[in-house]
Length: 185
Image (cartoon, rainbow, N blue to C red; front, side, top):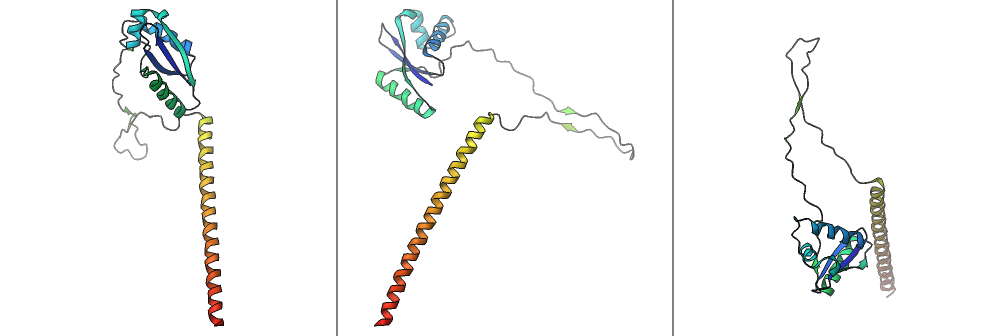
């Protein structure tokens, strides 16, 4: 994950953003989005007003996890007094389709061959997917991390119990020593 800056060479204004791709690819996306009239973001207005050649896109830092990314982003924002590009859309919004609500499906009535009783129908709700949607590798990594934490907690618990037992032995030994000296007097 990359933290990058886009500097307007005319106004010296700095925009700060993040990307998983390369800075060049992201800059191309911003240039293409600026050509669309639906975009009202300040960067797009500046690209239209000053031209793409008036900007310099550069990599600020590379982060290895989300926490690091957040820290580096905030650092870049503070250092450059930048304008955040977080949440700036580079694609035209799609029209929203309103789907009709799904109805419960009715099973066909079945007559009981033996009873000849009344025929009943059972409404069945559409099945909603459930379960995990992450990859097996992610789940395995999570399970391993949980197991490690559990092992660490257990080790801390055992060490604490051992320390308490040692302290109790020392107290008992002192009491025994005190008791034996009192009898000698």
